[in-house]
Length: 282
Image 1 (tube, rainbow, N blue to C red):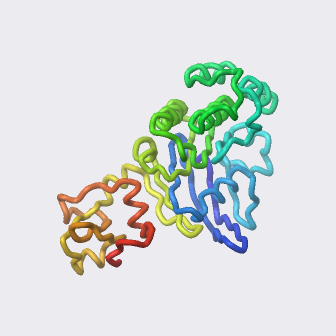
Image 2: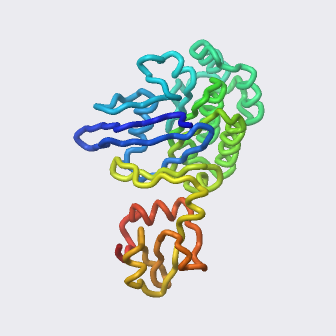
Image 3: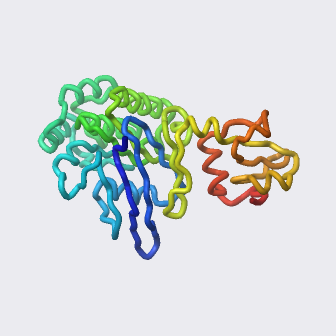
């Protein structure tokens, strides 16, 4: 079952084009979105969160059209963007009151409990918090809205490993309810290796990869070779130079028993050519 269904989404401006993009975001799963800067991740999230209107295409939220169920859908979705979307001069306790007035399902007791858990003092102003603490505050505010779908844009960017681990723990706790769904973009691919159920890779406004982690573990391998053979070159999905020769991303057909399962970072690099350096050829 899908929490969100995107069909033929088209968004164009003078610098960017997303043409007929389609994607299913599975209910009860964590889906991670990866891509280079400018690949279209934030554009897609802005369209999902109704901050940007596409030229064409449709988005269904739990099978419902936004135009027909606006109030209901807005109550089911919470978003965390790449920076705070509230006045940083406000105290945390004032943010609680403001969000409770905006969101009827806002859970004040949950908010207070999570603030205590993550040492967010009610009388502190958001501006006085570290970047990591501000990110946790944003997520706590989103979770207290009691959403079914949580959408996040780079929730751990610039956050130290300790704060990142706590943010990932928050997302895992949220997913203890099987009806919940998380969709988040990140450059920190290690986070996806730990908690994501699905990996989606964007490049140039297109979805170029969309697989669940089980399929990745069974269907893809990284093969290390002293030299690139014609057979591997023909079948490789991506090839990169290493200090010892070349390595290739291939479909797992059992021909390379010593090959390893790719990480999310390796999938991204091999499929998008990373920064363009160290490519042997395709």
